[in-house]
Length: 87
Image (tube, rainbow, N blue to C red; front, side, top):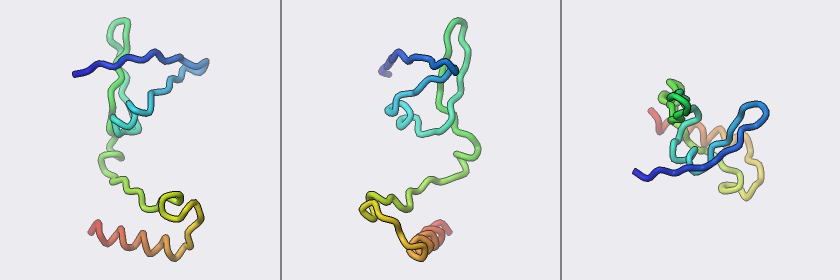
């Protein structure tokens, strides 16, 4: 297992930023922080909400419509189609 290290600054409010590559690899919106002696362990944590939901990008304005809006009826039709697939 490859170990990656990165020095991160802590803001005045005690915040750190996890690198995007780490966040994408973890695939979660929550982390668990454990104290180990003088150190901390940060591990991905999937909440019950995250386990229950299925994330689907239904509409991406840049990808699907060249950055323009989409009419409400088109969005509703897409939502209905997606809901039918889930059943």
